Length: 280
Image 1 (cartoon, rainbow, N blue to C red):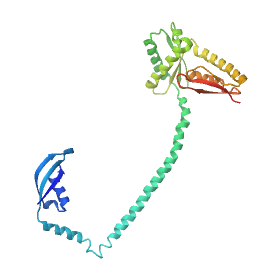
Image 2 (cartoon, rainbow, N blue to C red):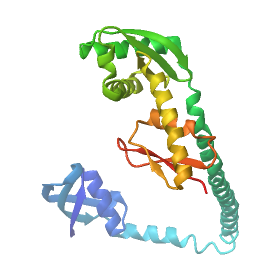
Image 3 (spheres, one colour):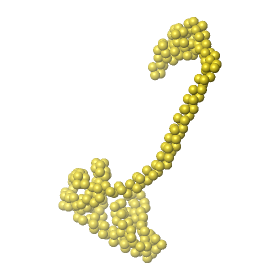
Image 4 (cartoon, helix red, strand yellow):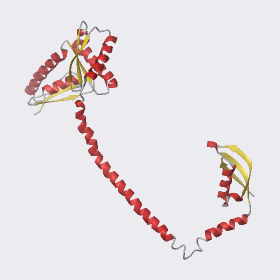
């Protein structure tokens, strides 16, 4: 009789564990639980007394192992098939390596795929706003203006690429524009934040009032050209006041073909500004 400590969920499982430890068959085990405590994950910790029935039964197990060695001439051919299996397994692994190699080559091809989004990035502006987008966007802008208690009328001016161009008119139109366009720029920024969440097509809004945008573009274009002339005369860089992104684009566009100067933006939003520099 031997005393063992085991972890098992059931008596049968305890018998199997005891048989494994003692190297005998399960049906040779007579097991008595003398102590039992709860364990983790449903397993119990058991202290058991184990009696091995018919210990001589171990002998048959040994001859069974001996049968493999006594088979002298016949077992030797058996390893041959095993070697063949190993050899056939080896070629089976080669395709796996080949597949890994092909996956590596696929990884090498990924940069090409990665370049596609880059080439697609400029294609983002190819989003074309629709009449349905315009209706949805006009409703969003209208709700914002109503919440701010502005008395204005909204009309659809045009659709340009991904942009829905809206025109504001009415009693409070001048108030919506604000000083130097600060209010209308903020309204446009806020509207596009909401639109980006609610309009799945990727359409955006450009809001104008009292023809402010056109007048502002003309002013910025003229100012950019005047500053460029000063840069050419002095040979020094000139820095604009901070501008929103769509107004910086106006300056860049105005001087894109202007000989002798180049433009770039620097700084962090909302204080990002355009720099006009001599090219020589």
